Image (cartoon, rainbow, N blue to C red; front, top):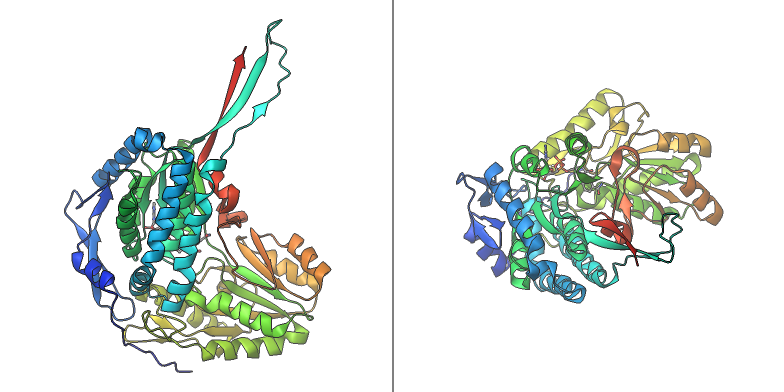
Length: 505
Ligand code: NAD
C-alpha cells in the first residue's frame, strides 16, 4: 500500500522562525542562557527531510554541575522557598496560560523536531501539557500534614505529647525525558515537582531538544525565580549520566527505556537516591466476542498508530476472540491503510515520520525478522519518504508468542493480532511479559470487563478505550515497566518527603 507523502510545509509561525534563527541555543542555568563550558553544540534535524533546524549546546559535566548548583541555591532562596502556596499555584497557572498562548508555535516546533503530525501536537499533546500545569496548580494549597494522637509510654507524667507531620519538597530533581512526546513528558515532571516546591534540572532527549528550550524561555517569562528550573541539552551518556550521578540531586525522575532505567536503578541504589522510573511497555488489548467492534477497531488502531506507535502504552499485542478475529483484522487493516502519512506540519496528515532513520530501521528490522519467521503482513510493513523515516501503519498476523516481535517493544506503528478461544488462555498470554504498563479490554459485558481488569498485570487497564490519559489519572508500570507513579496525588508524592515532629508539652 502506498501512501502519499506530502512534503510541503505551511508557513512557519513567526515565533518558530525566530526561535530557529536564534540558534545555537544555550543552556538555561540560574535564569540565564549560556553556551556549554566546552563551547560544543549538536544539531537537531527535521526527521522528514533531514533539513537542519538549529543547534543546541552540548552539556557536559561542568554544565551539569553548574545547573545542579543553581537548582540547589534556588531551593534555599526565599524567592522560592518562602513563596506562598497560593503564589506557587498562580505561577503554575501562568505557565499554562503562556503555553496556551504559544500553542501553535510549540506544536509546530514539536512537529518539526520530533516529526509527529500537527494534529497530534496541536490538539493532543500541547493541550495535555497545558492540563498538567493547570491540574497541579491546584495542589500547592492542599499539601497537608497530619496531627497524630500518640500512646507513648515514655511520656513524662503530667506532660502531653503533640505530634504532627509536615510535607517538604524532596530537593533538587533531575528530570530526564525521552523523545516521543517531549513537551508533554517534561510537563508531567515539572508541574508536580514545582507544585511540591522542588527545583529542577531538566534534560530533554538529544533527538528533540527544542520544545524544552522554548518552554525554558516561557518559564523565565512567567516569572519563575532564577534557578528553579534549569534546562541542560545534550547526550544521555554525557549530560544524562552526569546529572543522574550528581550528589546534589535528591530525586531522579526518568521516563525512557527499560535498559537505561535499570542502569539508573543500579547507580541510584548505591546512595539510595530517590528514583521514579516510567519505562517501556508491550501493552495487550483483549477483544471479547461481545465487543462493540467498530469502537474496538478505532480505539485499538489509534492506540497503536497514533504518533507512529512511538507511545509507551501503544496497543502492540491485540488478542481477538476467534468469533470476531477476521473482522477485527480487516477493520484494523482498513483503518491503518486509510491513514495519511505526511510531513509533521502537513495539517491533513494523520501520521508523520518516525523520530529518526535509526528508529525506522529498528522497526524495519522487526518486520524483516518476523517475515523470515513466517508472519503475514496484512497491511503496511514498509518505510517511505526521502530518508525512509516514514513507516506505514502495519497489521501482522501469524505471529507466535515466543517471537521477538511479541516480546520486545517495537515503538513503531506495528500491531500483531492473534486469535484466542479461551479467556484463561488469553489472560495467560497477556500477562506473559516482563512489562506491565497498560492494557485494554473490549466487551459490552460489565461484569466480565471488571473481572478481566482485575486479572491483568498492568499499571493501567482501559475498558472500551485505549490511551485515555490525563493529569488526574495515576500512571505507572508494574513489573519492568517502572517504579512509582506519575499524575494525580500519587504523582505529587514523588516530590515530597515526610517529616514527623514530636513535642513534649
Ligand atoms: P532512552 O532511555 O534512550 O532515553 C531517555 C532519556 O534518557 C533521554 O533524555 C536520554 O538522553 C537519557 N539517557 C540515555 N542514557 C542515559 C544514561 N546512561 N543516564 C542518564 N540519562 C540517559 O529512551 P528513548 O529512546 O528516548 O525513549 C523511548 C523509551 O521511552 C521507550 O522505551 C518508551 O516506552 C519509554 N517511554 C515510557 C513512558 C512511560 O510513561 N512509561 C513514556 C514515554 C516513553
